[in-house]
Length: 237
Image (cartoon, rainbow, N blue to C red; front, side):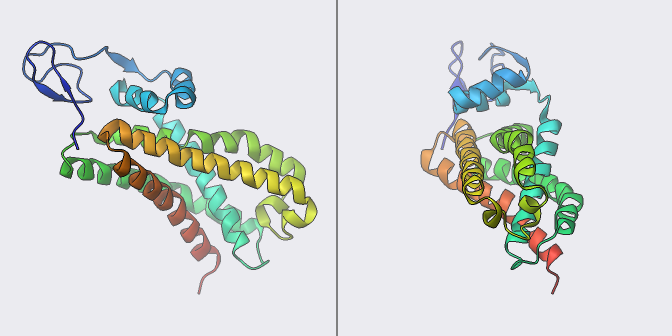
C-alpha cells in the first residue's frame, strides 16, 4: 500500500499528512489549523473520505475529547442494554449503572490502543501515519452513534421508560412496532459508523479490501469488547 503526495517543486514523495515537502519545504496543500466541527460533520454525509482527510490535515484536533467521551457513553449504554438482553429476563437498571460507571474509561483506553495498533499496522504495510490522526478519524467515525445518544435515547425513554434499558420486561412486549423501528434505526446508525471507519481507513491506506477488513474489525473490537465486559460485570461466575 502507498499513500503519498508528490511535491510539485522537487518531485519528492511525501507522507499524505505533511504540510510541506520533507526535501525542499515547498507547500504540499492548504493549511488546516483546526477542525471545523459542523463542516466536518456535514462532510461525513457528503464525502466521508474527504472528511477523514480534513481530520488528518488539521493541525489541532479540537472537539476530539468531546467526541470520544460521548462515544464512550453511548457504547457503554449500549453494552449495558445488551447485557440485559442476554441476561435471560433478569435485566435491571443496576446493570446499566454498572456499565456507565465502569466501561467509559475502558472504551477510551481501547480507542487509544486501537490508534497505536493502526499506526503500527499502516507502517508495516508501507503507509506513514500519525497516532493523533488515527485517533481522530476513528473517533469521528462514531458521530452517527453519538447522534443516536442525543436524539434517539430521549425518544426511547419517552416511549418505554426504564424498560427500554432494563429489558425487564422486554420493550417488544410493551410496544412491538416502535421497538422494531427504533432497533432498526439503531442498527442502521451502527452500520453507518462502520462505513465511516472503512472510509477513514481508506483515506490513510487507499486500499479498499484492507479498509473493509479494518472497518469491520474496528466495530467488532470497539463495540464487541465493551458488550462482553458489560455481560461479565453483570453476570459474574
